[in-house]
Amino acid sequence: MQEKKLRSLIPEFDWIQEQGLRQKTVHCWLDAMNRGGWSLEDLDRLPFTLLISDCPVSFRTHVRSVTQMAAAAAKIFNEQYPRGPVLNLDWVVSGGLLHDIGKLLEYQVADGRFVKSENGRLLRHPFSGAALAAGHELPDAVVHIIATHAKEGDSGYRTPESIIVHHADFMNFEPLK
Image (cartoon, rainbow, N blue to C red):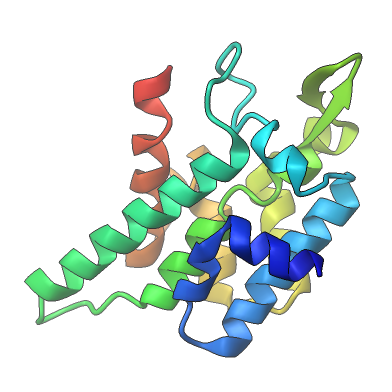
């Protein structure tokens, strides 16, 4: 029941063609929500960042927008650059949907406000999100996208799929600051 509702709130799950990857992506989301104590309704109340005071964009909206932009960019890239590299669209979509999944562990509500949790104080969301995804046996390429999408990936290697998600994420953050 909750899986069906989540997939209706975030229809981009259905963009993942490979059924096993789609299921693992959905189950990772449900697990993160459960571990963080979040309901489906919370996804529209939860701000996508605590770095913007009174953030006007919800977690769900941000994740959907990043996923949509990353998928569109990857499709255009594959069409315009046929000699490669060919981007794996399923990895881009799964990575877009999961890039901030660790925030469901990083945030909590205290005194009616969204704040960092103890988990968030110790582990930024790229770390907790990558661990969560690895625990759900998502492909290393998707775990890599989660781990490297933010500043933690700036000093190392990013796959082409991770570069796309990284830039889509910052396109959905920088203009709002």
